[in-house]
Image 1 (cartoon, rainbow, N blue to C red):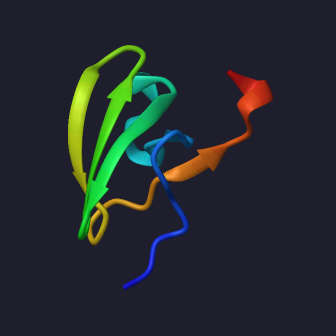
Image 2 (cartoon, rainbow, N blue to C red; image 1 turned 30 degrees about the vertical axis):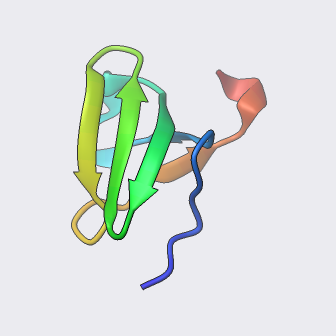
Image 3 (spheres, one colour; image 1 turned 120 degrees about the horizontal axis):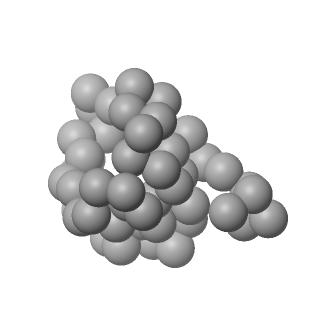
Length: 59
């Protein structure tokens, strides 16, 4: 599966909006490490969670 995400992208987790905006640190296979404003660093399984990209200006 191909994901339209890369390190440096800003994203939100639609099911956990209170985490705030996160920045992708790395992606290895289907796991993205994301540093969220309000919740710190999380490893997200991209097969289970569809992260939404946000425009840089929004943050």
